[in-house]
Image (cartoon, rainbow, N blue to C red; front, side, top):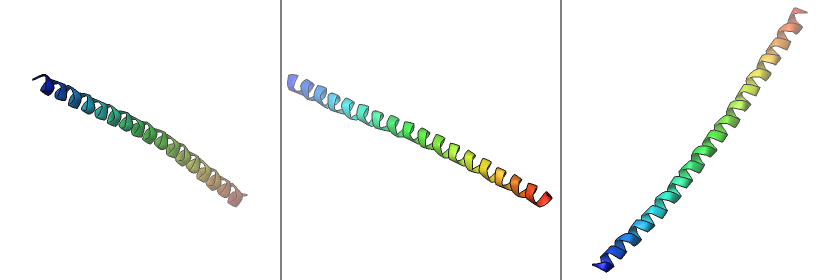
Length: 64
């Protein structure tokens, strides 16, 4: 009986450690994805602004 209880406790401890590690990994993945999205959004916004600037300069040149 004591042996079965100890086996269950050991299995619980292993499962707990495994799930904690998975949770940490998924949190890291989520945070990295958020960071990547922020960087991509900033680059996209910068590209849009540059294209608008080039288009505006092109219009000014053709008007003058």
